[in-house]
Image 1: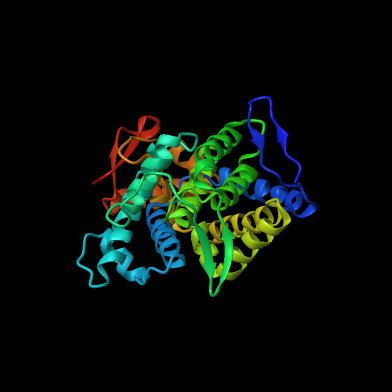
Image 2: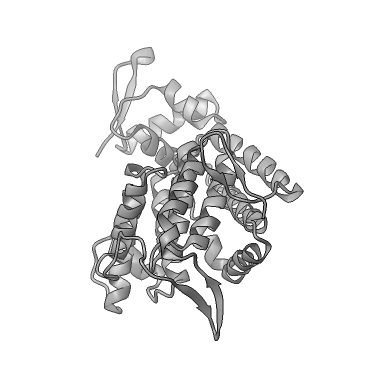
Length: 329
């Protein structure tokens, strides 16, 4: 294992930029460009909500939580759910933390501990605190991974946080590297898997806001055996290259799904919902609406706005060029 030190004073985690990684970075960058062109960085409210539910459900299911997608949805909607008490506690914790993601800094050790405390409150006694003893991950009868001694945890976490703070490193790669290194360090006695997945999303959000609403965890759940396999391979190889390739592939797929849904739902309802998500309580003009939708003609924009006013979705003020619109509550 070859280690290198950056000018920022951190020890750079070991990985290689393979042809697979280069190809995936190119494809993801192209899709992110399309996301920006179509103004999908903040998807429609319904899609954002559904994807957030998928993220929470999937990350918990990976860890053995028995609640269904419908039950998670019910908890989010403050409805009564019957199920194992510990699973309901896990779900409520995750909902609270995911909803506060935008208030967390991925570079802050204090926020890292705060998020863990939120996820694991009333589940583990040491929620929000680094482990103080050795741990191993057991798969069946075998020890799949023996974590670093507890004494090394704080320094290793400081190191990986410095790495992701380096603006010279690509966010797409940094997020994957952090995810792997976090699982390797295993800083907490429990809850490391859900924290690694959460923090990768938080890192990506700093450069690409769309990732706040993409359910990458859902794709990990659907490829769970491969997820653990690539973690194991990276452990044996002494670098995270294979894991980076795997996670970039899932990121690419999540963007593909978003773009497919957006193309399919290019109708009046989806365009108005997209406008509601973007403008919220603010006034906007027809020109603002056209800039948001990008692909529609001026006549279709006028028809959309007239229809929304007729259906009392929008309130209209002014006349001709001075006309402004605002969503009714």
